[in-house]
Image (tube, rainbow, N blue to C red; front, side, top):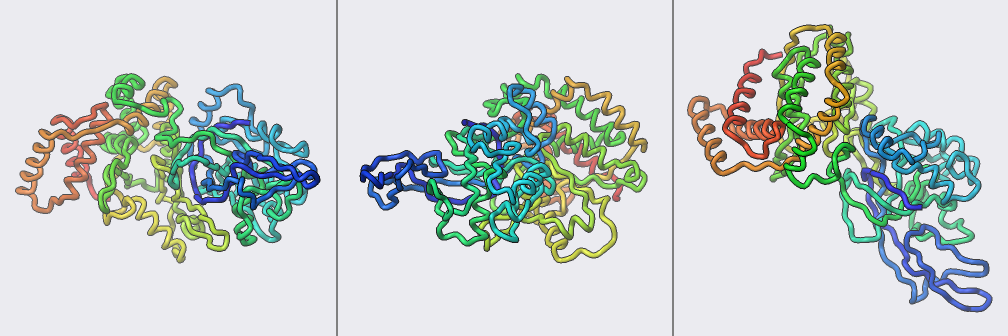
Length: 530
């Protein structure tokens, strides 16, 4: 049956495919052509065999992507998609909800054999019960029996530990190229044939169209997981998504479309500023900078420079705020506004044990995901208040280095963040502050803010020639008075001005916005050090 869903790509590889297969009747000697497109198993009738060396066979390559549900996709996104598709049945107990547009169990009932249990094939009872537990819990691994290899484990390759959902092998037949961590929407034909769980040499009624002959045991186990845990999807059409916000169309063609969908962006921005100022305990400067962070996006990579990023470091969260779980409360608010986010408590245990960096498993010939293998526009909140005294082991040092590189923008030798601001609370009652935030966030305002943040991030922006001249003149005048001002300072100010402009619904820089950016920069620099 056709299926539709959104996935993010964590692995790439190419395997053989056969379009037209020559089948011979061993009794009569008659041959016929059988289409092999959109299939994993070549099915033969009684007394028939496949002639793999027939000149009539058409052999080519299809590209197979290993995809997982979007990491860090927030619950409100999944809920809205579920409400938009009320005809879709609830997922079975073996699959955890992760933006299911089509329930896997529903398709499994149609595409698999009758020997099923909760939507999972039960062929080979040694693996079924433990394998289903892995599907329910979203663990990275399941029982050794699920792989068909004694003593081995099946890693579902989720970047985030404890993540729930169903991964999928997405198979493309046309010349479409996607990159790692792209989010793609797929329409295709679902395949959950239970015979795919067997070793390639064990097929008795058909022949696998996947070329597994040269694979080692570990590689075959990783590349041919049981379809009950990792179904196959043969793609009819697929395209890359620029965002996953269910409140907006997939593509925003112009700034006029943005304004039509979000209404007055200045009005929405001011409402958001008030909400964030309350959540930041009355600190207006921190609220302004947080808005800029939430709408920021990398718009160009030039040599080693990453243009447009705007990471933010909120400093000065004292013990009193920690005891009131301030970081948890603030992250809860952020996750209710953006489509994708994840919080990482920077404990010694997490730093020393979690895999941050994707690494190649040469024995299984695949890429093993790491925590930092996240999609574009995912807001990663790193809680440094959880870090205590202790020793960082080798992996911990590697993870810290990787984290620094991500925050810096992969390559630029900056400090750990673009903008650091010390939180200056006007009051310290966290519970009261977030109670007021909850009262301010009416359903209508919450929906407008969610649309606004995505739309502002996707707006086109142009720096006109007259404004370029004005910026250059200001920079020269500033350098005359302070020779410590560098080209990096100018770049940071231009990024800040850009974010202020798009956050107000403007797609060009104006003198007023430029002056506001200068004032905001000066206010930040005048803050007392931590």
